[in-house]
Image (tube, rainbow, N blue to C red):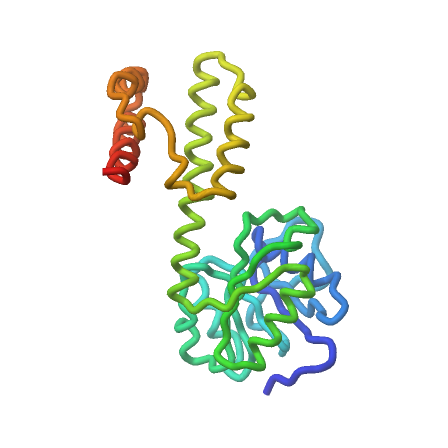
Length: 252
């Protein structure tokens, strides 16, 4: 049976970007102790808490599964059903812990880097737990990391994860495509940086739907056709037309 001490002992499972960031941050906290840190492989700079066998896990007050969604169920076989265990996924429901009554979720809404020691400062976390006492543990952990928290259920969390994909992953992909156009045509990408910064800033302080601009928004079919002719890649041409149509449909 797992019991709580004054200083909570935490085991991190996973040494990717998120696992590394959490382990490094928790290792410097006052009221939480990094007990063990599991990774399948390690480089030569092995941390003192590192382990490579899940079967050797010690009892901890909290197990944080910072792993891919499809690995969560497999790892649960190695964790005592009486212990408090959480995952960090945006898309996976808390229902994955059907055999672990004391369970929850700690999902940071942030792009994760291994090396940023102040990563979680001001970061909002979506948290959820089956029991109030365990929820309090997650609240205290987030505050110790200097982040903030929002109580969201699994459906809400999946939707905010979807939203994050649109505004982060998809937007970054579009920026990458714009940068490639500049590179292919010997144009300094720096010319677009003021516009990019203004676009993001304006979207943060206004309703993006109300400040949409561009040829699709104003129905400039001549410009749209010129752009289409400039795009040689068929997939990019199709994507340009789909996004154009989506913008047009939003204002019909």
